[in-house]
Image (cartoon, rainbow, N blue to C red; front, side):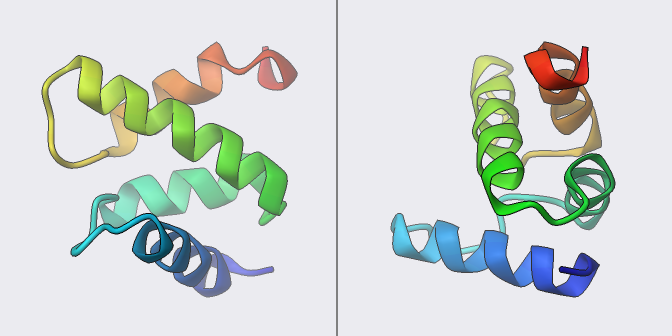
Length: 78
């Protein structure tokens, strides 16, 4: 899976969950791809943690900083 496929996967998963627009910035998607190398299970896990980090910060968009925090919090990347 490449960066474009990863971005498409994130969009599809968010649409399935009822999202109506982009929640992840392009930088966030890029870092998410770099961290997971397109592995679906890892994308799901890190994206979930990143969305929680954004929500904790009362942000409506998930940016690169939220993804970085999620990567740090994830046990397989520590």
